[in-house]
Length: 127
Image (cartoon, rainbow, N blue to C red; front, side, top):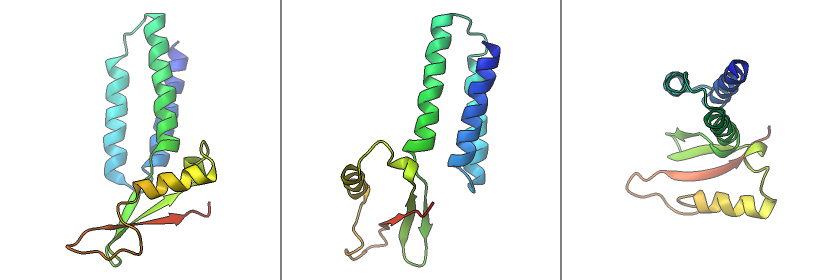
């Protein structure tokens, strides 16, 4: 079980590196939180509890790799730029993915921005 725990830790460690690439603060905080969670469960020996923890690792890894996108504020255009990569829409067909993106957009690109509100612009990733 120890090797399975190390493998789970490494998978989450790599997933957080991919998710937070370029964001030093998020990388530091996520490393600390990941380490704390594994240390907290260091002495779990019950096979059922261990299995639940490993299922949780699988779910967290999937969420980190496929369910979370980062955006950057573009100060010049007052928009948040989010690159939607293919892995973020794998489970959805094209129509469903487009509907999800529209639902998550707080303003369309045709709307005027007032009172310093940030406009969210959906862009497509090329890779």
